[in-house]
Image (tube, rainbow, N blue to C red; front, side, top):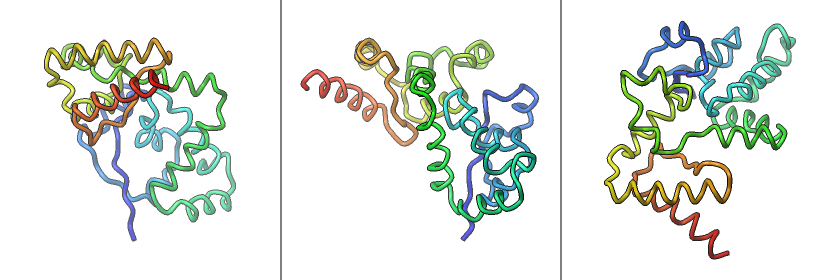
Length: 198
């Protein structure tokens, strides 16, 4: 069975690398992905998985797939072990879990507010705002319909979001790729309600 992975643009890569990547997702067989000969090529596909934190992906590649730091048997064992994307992600997650708590907190804090930056990002402002939000996050937020929040919804979101950040010192984080704005608002309100009632 052939397994595929969607290529993602990586905002942490150089401008030259960015321009060489297609703005629309493409597909790559996982065996081709695992055979990429350099960290730069691997990061071009996966570097944006962790918000502004390509180090975890680079560590995985260096310790498991890099031809200059691993012998052939190690690389072959990695390719034999990782037969689908779930296994690959599970292995990369271990690098996050093994990192110091300060690094994990920094990863959480690097996530943008789900909607507060969204309206600032357009063709004339993108260069300025790329420092605060990645292309992956911008597209994900757009798919969730957060740009269509009504004034009342935005007011509620802003208040709940500030309450959440004040209480936990991290932004509210939710995978919104397949969620509607109603799911996002309900989840944020629900987390705050559960904490306040406990």
